[in-house]
Length: 448
Image (cartoon, rainbow, N blue to C red; front, top):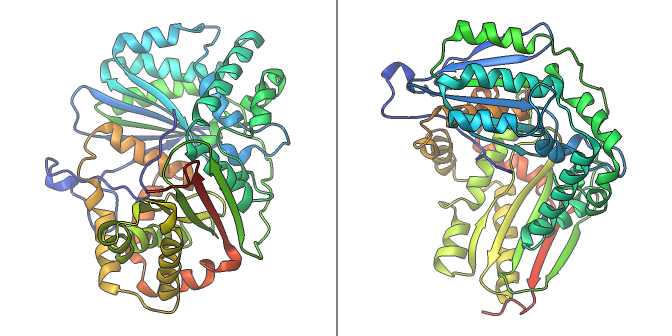
């Protein structure tokens, strides 16, 4: 149930009427936004998709909000529990109704927010609104159901730990962060997950604390009657009166020296190499998020000299990339490589370091920066043509930035990035004292 969107998304479709084509500055579709008296933000986007509608609910709670010792993993846990039912619609009834209309219905959790999404026929929208409002207002589950789902979450952890990625993420975050909740994954610390079946009372307080209208945004995209939808939204969601809690998030102290962490993987896989630097939070009033979007493509994108050297010509790496994405709090900017063999690790590390140092010294290709900006704004988005695509991208950036038009403003910031800003950013943040290095070596030593 986890899903990551690309760093930068815009909608572009040759099939759209001329009036809907994107400009150089803004998101191409008008947003209709209302805020209910209880604080719920409701965003509607009319989209030419006869008979289809996407319905996304963004709750701005993620693993960053798990500040109490021993209580990690609950944001992800509620992704599961929210499907358990209410007094009006007991467990299983919602699923049957949603399935009867043919909706594709799911959810995902990130460090910063949780999203519930459904996509299907407009004919079922009235029923869907009633079901969604009911579960967000009136979620009910007994302790036995809670315990059963907690064990299912533990099983999900065991399934994921069979792959290197989870342990790599745990080791990297646990080394790079000492105080901030980003030091654990969305699944949570293993000991906390094992103890979760005994935390029924805490789970209820977590729901009351964060599942509130003033911490939630709705996105409805597609073919619908706007006046009728808003009338029902007000009727169904209006009585939802909880207020989100004010729980301080610990501040991560500055890193003062290079850190390293190593994993010996017990089975055969390809070696991995990751460099990660602390970088500022993503906000719309500073250029940091936009700079990092451009910087990732500049350093390790498919048009980069590093990609040409390490992947195409010397074939030392199976792939190189950047797994970073905008975060609400200061997070990490990463360069990563899946190596062909352990013997190439030193060469790849040297190449990464050289590329960063060259940029920090002022060597920057302005023409390539401009091309990357254009590609980010248009090139990656040709296949995003459905209401589900639109709602998903709007929801993602609203989850990060806290505003319905977060994507549009981020696009504008990306367009404003200047080559010298990449230089300044690298000089300030991509330095050894701010660096954490993760290495993974498989059981066979990563021999070719």
